[in-house]
Image (cartoon, rainbow, N blue to C red; front, top):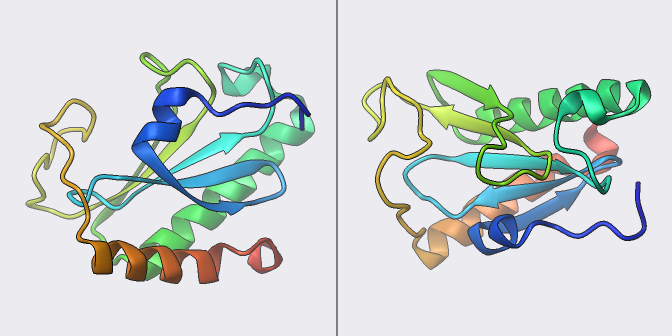
Length: 141
């Protein structure tokens, strides 16, 4: 991890922090249409997964798998979309999106699909609590 790590301002504005795993911060996208986590390795200067040292790449996949399993447990879904695009936000980050047949973007990608819909305050608080309980670093094997 890099001491001078800073989260990209766009990610900061569009997400809520959920947890700090050993490598990544786990964020919740502020879009109620799609339950959507973003994992950001706390390493300055990385734009691609291949920029990470080998041990960090392995850890990233462990944390992606953990976050995906938690999301699927908390928000039952038909499909999990996992991707690292970085075309707009260059800072390395990985999307984990729970999808349901018939959701607003189905079967296409969520990126660029309409405007984000804010969570109702109580729904957001409940989702955040359920995700945080399961995302704790001690629950990661």
